[in-house]
Amino acid sequence: MRDQAWYLRELVPAYELFPKSDIPLKAKRIAITSGKGGVGKTTVALNMGIVLAENGIKTLLIDGNVNLSNLPILSGTAPQLHFADVLEKKMGLMEIIYPFQNDLYILPSGLGSVDLLEQEEKFLDHMRHEFMDLDAFFDVILIDTASGISSTVLGEIFSADEVFVITTPEPSAIGDAYAIVKILTFFMPVLSVRVLFNWVNSEKQGQESHEKFNEITEKFLGRSVRYLGALPYDENVRKAAMSQVPQLFQYPRSKFSRQLRRIVGELTNPKNELMYTLNVRKN
Image (tube, rainbow, N blue to C red):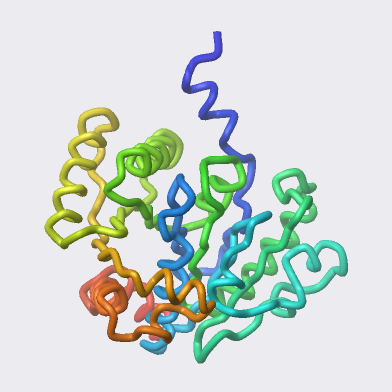
């Protein structure tokens, strides 16, 4: 009989989609995922990258949405080359990466019908060397995963050192976030996971939503998920998306922008493990 565990095993990819390098001081990799579309995942990833770069942290943002890429739209960019060119034209990853602002770079996906999970081990070895160069060049690599739960999404998540799950207080979004945490608990229990609640009415609602979420994960999965923070509902986010200008550029003093800066500020606090990792690299 095919039980639930069988279904989960079917989703798990054979390889990391973005292979990890084996150099000692590699970039900190963070996968930003949601399990559900439409919760503001890409907006958070792009603007988080902007704040990190503003703090002098050399950051690479990987667009992991294979078929419905929103990152170029939200950033107002039109990349000429994509990840598929690495396969078809035998180009290097550094050749298709383009700068977005000082210390922030974007790796566009645009894979189309190309499925890395079906490539031969020889190609994966090649990509592992390519990503070794990226790990040596960048301090932080943000992976904006595709939406939903699939082998592609999990291959992207398994490529990371840490996972930020973006959700909202809406029940179906929380359900999808729980599904992501459940799979990671089942297959990668030591992978660090934090949750961020988007579109909250208040910080109190974000904290209460996290407490309820944790009650569920502790009861059924036996694990506690750390609280990354909460971002307020802000009409300016929609306006920025419509104008194809990042929120932090268009409305730098909006509620969303100020709170996101606080959250990233906590991440880059000298006492935080992220900053510790960066200090080790630079020293």
